Length: 117
Length: 112
Image 1 (cartoon, each protein chain N blue to C red):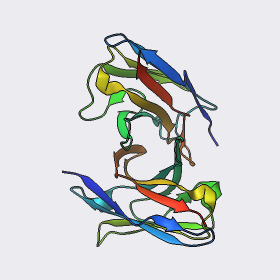
Image 2 (tube, rainbow over the protein chains, first blue to last red; image 1 turned 90 degrees about the vertical axis):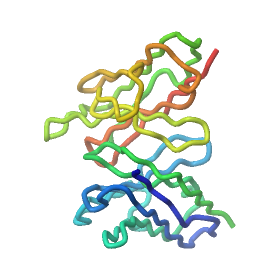
Image 3 (cartoon, each protein chain N blue to C red; image 1 turned 180 degrees about the vertical axis):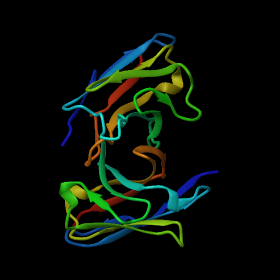
């Protein structure tokens, strides 16, 4: 069974850092691009970042460029999102998502990030 | 960035009756590879989103055939032929033809 298990997140002060992880199982991780999507409390979905299956290319929404960094370790079947210089507006549930050529086909359970002093 | 606009934002429906959601993009979603990366996602209360429809009209694995979708270019539609109680939630259209991927605002489907 295909699964994505997320970890990390929690409460952090403005300006702080957090790292999110998600471990993939049940599918060949290195065959798939991966994305992070977030959802602020009571709001809609916002795509945050994408990494190609080879990790050769990465993409970010403008609001996180220069602050967030996506990476992957295919030896561990794990995706990461390093979040630096956190702001209150980064408060959201973050979802790790498996892609099938642009289709967000498998979503993790989500992890809540709260940025507050 | 491509703006995705959904209508309606709220849709009260009687059980067993049809429902329809529209999604319009601010520019064509036809990718240079010829595909149109328009998908529909469902988010039930308290759950992560799940993929319903990909590439305009293809039902994802396990999605009931009461869900159908169509469209082309900039105008797309999701239809539910007969709404069931488990269909309650928020529905999003999403484009992945161009980075950044963008979502519609979401349409809340509720039972009358």
